[in-house]
Length: 97
Image (cartoon, rainbow, N blue to C red; front, top):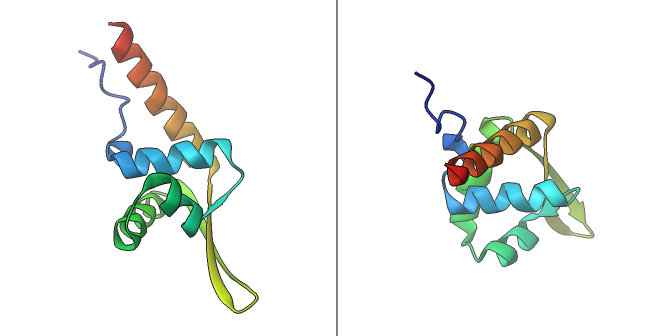
């Protein structure tokens, strides 16, 4: 039997990860500061969730310097985009039940 929640992705079950992915799906990239402000997350919280998504290969991290300030920016990978779309479709199906 195929469960209706099969395509709901465990990687996106936390609201911060859901937020990170949602922001990156509509923006080419977002830096740490932007994600932190939009999601109201602490540094540690945001760092652990971005790390988890990076480990899944759903987002890619780019570290650079702007002037003398370190800048960390994130963008969604092709794999991440596909996985997130599937996840959202699964939730939509679930809501239509």
